[in-house]
Image (tube, rainbow, N blue to C red; front, side, top):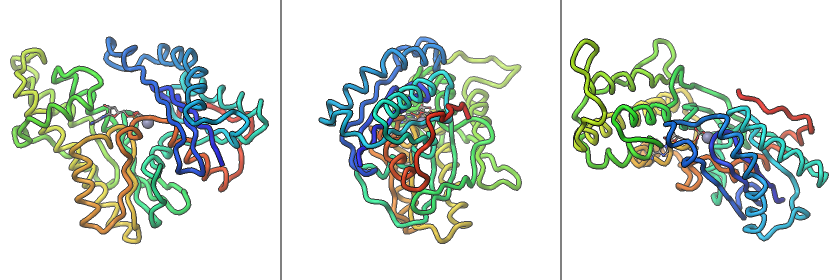
Length: 338
Ligand code: KG4
Ligand code: ZN
């Protein structure tokens, strides 16, 4: 079965064609980084307008790359929640019009759950049940995933997402935007013992995360405490930036691994580990996840770089299994910010 997937929740416009949930025939992702760079973050109105301008052409490209015509598409999947509402609406409108015009099933999938499918693209399904970790600019969530794909949330961030913490730390250190990858690069040359940044524990909520304190610790630790001489990010040397980036990254990654370790203790029957989201591109996180999975005897499914970021292949893949589990959605499927 060939599923056409649409993804437009944030600042990537993406369309993909995936066969039987795993085989990616085409995955086209157009980033909007250049439109938002000067603002230091995603501007929702600009994002929505760019999706609307680009989605038709990107759909044509995906079909051409997959060497597939509309008549060979069997179903349409769309990430209909959560996201910037003006952006999500563009993908939902596109998906509905294709489904209606071709008379084929429409499937709505949850964007964050779709990230967990990204490690299953071009891979076999792992043994179930699995632990899932989605780490992105908007989410840091731990899941238990039972076969074939029933997701139960075990924990989530109570404040900033880990990607958001990366982006904010990058801004504080004068590394620019998009922040995650720049912190990752700067950290390669830094000493991670330079600063002792916190790994907050939430009383009575061992599987939830909090990352806003980490950002504050970077501000105070690197730029100075309130009431003292505060340094400007521009005044930091490259070495100071790298040391702070490495120390920040150690605390962020260790907090995530600690969460997984605790979830594993509470769910000793899990056999696999599914990872997804933009931060799963992080070099240190990838290394530490390999070690953790090996120590715990878990099958690790972590996406290759191109599917760490938002993409539509993960949406089409998850859509395929959802269609079998739940059947199609109605054409009145709602777009939702949550
Ligand atoms: O999944 P994604 O593309 O979009 C959301 O759904 O949020 O994730 C984007 C996030 C951004 O916060 C970005 O800074 C972060 O992923 N990111 C990284 C890296 N590459 C992207 N964070 C840490 N290290 C990286 N190499
Ligand atoms: Zn995402």
